[in-house]
Amino acid sequence: MSTKYFDSNGGIIGPDNEPTTTTQNEIITTFNSSGTLTTGAATTSLQYLIIAGGGGGGGHPVAPTFTVGSRGGDSSIAGTPITTVTSTGGGGGDTGYFTPNPGTQPGGSGGGGGRFATGSGTAGQGHDGGTGIRANQGGTDLSGGGGGAGAEGQDHQPHTTPTGPKSGDGGAGVASSITGSSVTRAGGGGGGMYYFGTTTVGSGGAGGGGNGGNPANTVSGGATNTGGGGGGWASNVTAFQDFGAGGGAGGYRCSVPGESSGGGASAESPLTVVGGTNYTITVGAGGAGAAAPASTNGGSGVVITKEPAVSFIGDSQPGVWTLNEVYDFVKAGTWTN
Image (cartoon, rainbow, N blue to C red; front, top):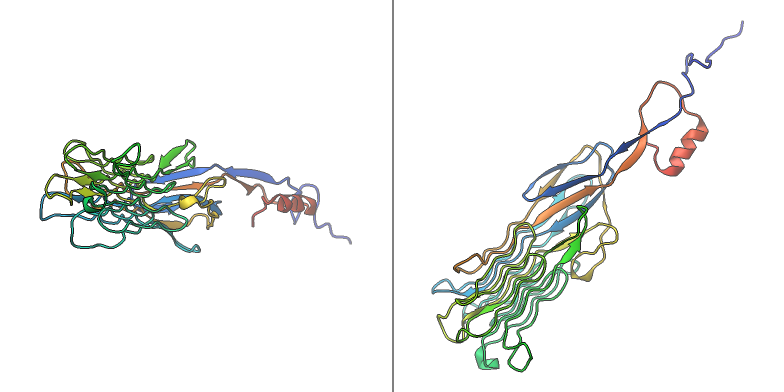
């Protein structure tokens, strides 16, 4: 007696079913504050834009609060199985006050220079700040602009230049279309100063950098959730010390194909992640700036993630697939266990 193990209706093994393709749509998530990202069930690749908090603007306000701007907070993505990706907070702007000497103000992008050295940016994240100068060296107190993700902060512009005397503008940021629209972020803060009330202050860099200020020019902080550096501030308190440099932009790291990271670097590689898994998102705060009539703080950072659309073999009815069908889907990269 013969035994029939299967037939066209399925039998013991089941019918010969056609595979069905299922799509998980693109998922874009914006974190304006720290939180948790839970990846989609079928997600295996994650693109990101990670911008740290911008540095605060430096200044020479009313004694005794002569201020060097504080560095912005770091932003990051962390979780299994990835190595944590961190953007470095922007460097604070320098002060024109004689003491203390803060040294350099490094960061994702460097803070602008005042009396002391300018701050350096972090490779792959941002640019250096611009230089400042004291009146006994160049005839006028002038500060540098904070570095931006896309360009260095402008150096002070002395009397001998067509635009001088003037404090430096903040460096420009970088544009990303991770959300579907092009937005520029991470601009440096403009330098502030007061020299007989006439010298021009620096403008904030494109991408949320704050404008430099003095009693005749309104200062502004870095824009929220851009990582922009705060503008520098100065009041007419002490001659030859009345200037404050712009804060540097927060570090800018991007893994969107075809775009750029900060400091002139190419886009990084997307992360390989696990679907349905929690990842910790940290969004850095802006650094504190000099006391002034308006904010000189750096702008807070932002983290934006993109999970590209995925097509995969979905569950259907019980049955079997032919080897040819399995081969075709494996070759196309759409076969999942």
